Length: 467
Image 1 (cartoon, one colour):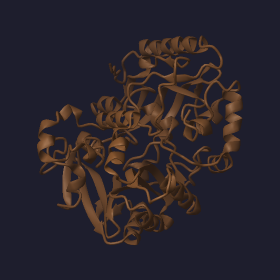
Image 2 (spheres, rainbow, N blue to C red):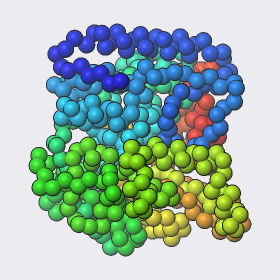
Image 3 (cartoon, rainbow, N blue to C red):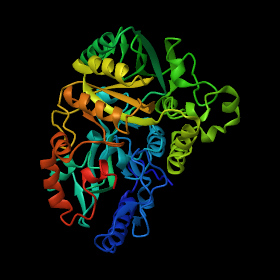
């Protein structure tokens, strides 16, 4: 249930509820015997590190009390939000006031706490950076059982700056105060085609410099590469009016529309969730993009979380793997990654990826930190423009090759080009390389301060070891 308190209303009952929920969770956490593995009780996940259920010794924390919007202040353009709140619920609450979070990740069931303790990105990231940059303060249940408030200049500023990319290994975000920005009712999209990665990346650099492209304001920018000779950048702007409005929640499929016509309009809500209906293009293996199946597949189940559950079921029972083996098909490797590459090296990365992996389409999303300070555990350089490449699917392995064949190549290339890789999926780094890439020294200091007993898994054990 989402409750919204308008500016000027009495908010003290909401704040009292906030503190009471945190106290209850802290009591439940401290009652768990030391050494017992702990996980949050979540009905959905957008991670692609598939794990078993953890066995009988696993303790789960009920965090349902932190799945709502506590208050929205339209005058200050801020909201107080539970860490387990999905972006679908958060956006619905703020759009009623003509506002949105500065960055809304593409999938409806990504939670605010997940996007902040992990990483999130979307087409406003060239203007607004990453979701954690809009956090003004947050209440965190730390690994040692404290509930503390962290903000940029507080006593716990080190935890505030070090929390992003910690993936719940330092603690859990309970309540977050975030900044919002105004929106218009519609979004005007223009799709620009490029014949090579070099041309597309030159256009990204131009947009980053000018804030527009060929006279079209760049409130939002992302891209889709169908091949090395067919790459599109979608430059979009807020609009108070729309001569028509497209709908990609029914029979029409958004990513196919990018190839033409060159211009489109969506409501602001449909724009935010344009990728969710078909999980970008990843609904294809389920047949949902075939007209007959699409008409029969209920609209309420055309969602990324439904597809992800189907993938998890398949992984758990080995259905596709067993079918491929019986048919004599080559073994496949899951290549599910998002990587950030400096824009000046991005064409080189795509050339490598197209030649070595060959998966398509590939999602492109330019980004730049909002402020002039880096975040220690994911050290992007302030002021520098990067391009996120997202690719999600399976690739047939060459004869004799084992799991990790493609992913290790990608990791090596990302490091060579001065880029970074998100940790929501499989990783193969050694402990030494992981510590070097993700600021192990800073992380170790935070771990000693906020989880000295090691009650929560380490970042390496969770993101590489799969704990």
